Length: 127
Image (tube, rainbow, N blue to C red):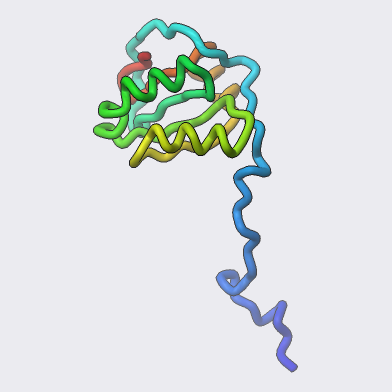
């Protein structure tokens, strides 16, 4: 009988399905909805990304900025969201964009942010 463990390739190993709902709720205590003062930054090589939450300000901002976000191919980080249903509602408002639930405190600290929604590009942080 072959030794299945020793003879298995890495690609043969079974993988558990990704359960995104198990990550929820996502909370970023250092971030909350509010105005963001635009500023110039120097982040060479960064892909455009944006931070949003599940709140009225983020929903309105996403609707308003959607064409720009799509044009930039921006990746969305959902930094405050309670449920899979709320995350799905955000995704339905953002066709063609990726929205990933992730705590944003570390990124916010590195970029000096305390408010969202915000768009971050290689040259600017803006609302």
